[in-house]
Image (spheres, rainbow, N blue to C red):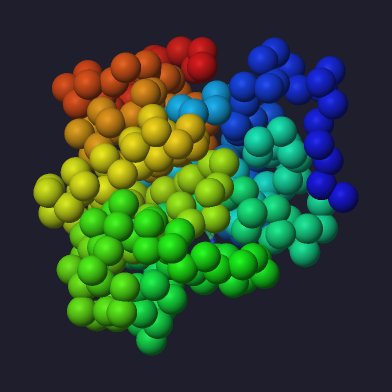
Length: 261
Ligand SMILES: Nc1ncnc2c1ncn2[C@@H]1O[C@H](COP(=O)(O)OP(=O)(O)OP(=O)(O)O)[C@@H](O)[C@H]1O
Ligand SMILES: [Mg+2]
């Protein structure tokens, strides 16, 4: 069973936490070919916050997101989303929880080419066996600027428009936490800005929690704070990031930065 943590074992400020990782470790491969992607990551993120995750290629950012979102399982440690522990439960339960509470946005959109914009958007509701409210679907797509594209297919859309469908799809279930792995990585500057504004709006206006991996200091500056990863470990945190300050910190990542997060 997925456990709803009791007050005592949640640590300080449990009610306000959307995500908690405790000593999360993940290794790929075995024996001499083993790669430690996450090496004892502990962190907590408040509800209604927008956090960027940055670090060099291979530092474990995607692995962190996959484990936090319940798409992958850590080897050890605890992952708690919105007060519920994902680690330790069965697969079916995990899937059910994920469909109800978590949204995910990928770099390459992951839309189904044979479905329309509206059909792609409602897919998570259908998979969760939830009622599809047509007005709500139109509302979500209008909010991402695609209210006039409901019947179009992905191949009739630009990259920025596709990613906005993916965001609508992530928002339609009204998830508590949205994870986005380089959501602007394949987009031009203007489309990237649209996507970042939508994510920020999900936080500011709808109280959702967003965790976004990015390589771009400008994208990171849309977040409330930035977590830096290096070699599968937290290597620092910056609140109120500016693009310049983030770029500066990235340049020195791996220098002797204290891991006090
Ligand atoms: N399925 C896998 N099998 C084996 N090794 C993996 C697998 N997925 C990730 N790794 C390894 O784990 C480490 C962390 O990978 P991860 O994808 O989390 O990095 P990342 O920070 O997201 O990198 P990038 O910025 O390039 O996307 C890397 O060394 C990678 O090679
Ligand atoms: Mg990655």
